[in-house]
Image (cartoon, rainbow, N blue to C red):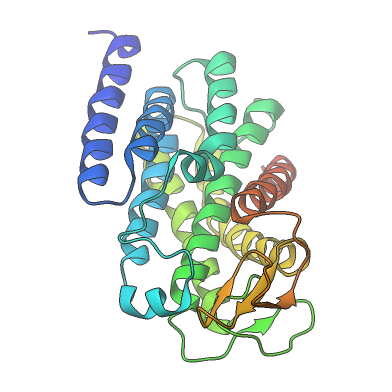
Length: 287
């Protein structure tokens, strides 16, 4: 059977199984499962590397979300059992990459190419953007999910003053290290799958290893950008009734930091967009 038929069929099958499983395990609600099926199908159908990046982000973030749930329940005012991401959260963390992947399909079909500006600056920029996107998404999620479990008190990234756990823009050393590790995992996934699915000259193939340090920096940098936005443009306050940090002002809420301008999903989209652009530029320059 032709690759043009086989790969989309595999994409639909794998995506439907994962979406159904995630819904049953409460990693996604119904709208999140439907959106997840759509973006997974797009990624896998266009290229196995892109599908692998999305799935690596999804599986690791879903697993980390469920670690230390009792502790997170005490801190997070919006805690949901199992994470239960909805369609807005799914698209916030995969929408930009989905658009880039569709442009790649229009440009080069189902042919997966190495990062090589001498061959195509546009393809290198687009693929680099996808890498940066998931390095940022993974880095921010790992940083948040593991940082809140740290015994260290977070510090607001803009002032370095100690703040309560759950404060937007609060960072810990453990969280920043987790972000870098998450980014490096995205890079490693891209390189390993790429060696299996792409064909290019030996020197170009060897140079793909540089994706790992680039994605490590993208994971760390994306988390820092997210924290800066959270500390300045996202409201954080302490509710004296619920005894928790909350994301909306109110009569019983004492402001900690940030303007009430962006919510968490908007912060994710902006930080991902900026990291995507920066990583895209870096890949064009390096490769």
